[in-house]
Length: 238
Image (cartoon, rainbow, N blue to C red):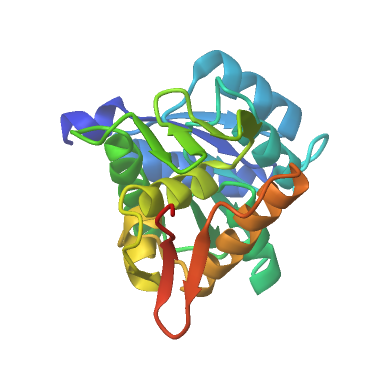
């Protein structure tokens, strides 16, 4: 196995023993280090203590359900950067959209192909490893909007706006090039990665949530403009 794969630890949150054993078998065979959690409370504890490289999260787990586990993980500074792949039998479009809104990096439905699951783990791991690296500016300002990539903070008019990782990534991608129009597919590649297995509509959902976050904070729209039939851009300050 490659060194990079062997070093990655995965926390699998699954209350069905047969499924948990199947996941463990295929991941360990591929060279991953695997820990198991059978309920949401145990998952949160292990995530804080072990800091896994990635979390596979079933939604219908006891004590604390997967939705709430994801919300808490992405809301805590010490765990928000851990990639989460939801692995669940809930296949409705609304469930998938909610998963991405809560900050999950990917969504896999049961029954699943072990080869596909491994491919998605590798894709999410590659994207997460590349986030924030390279020569990208750690701080940006567009008008009164300020983004600190190192501290994962967004402020406007000196007031902080709390965003999920995907919302933050989307706003950052637009803010790096004010005035430039990004097609939905381009934003999917930049924020979710080319192997993200998500639909273009996901971008629309996240843009709507971004605007709502600023509105709820009593702030003006950050300046995200819809270019009908094309995509989105962050307007240049006057």
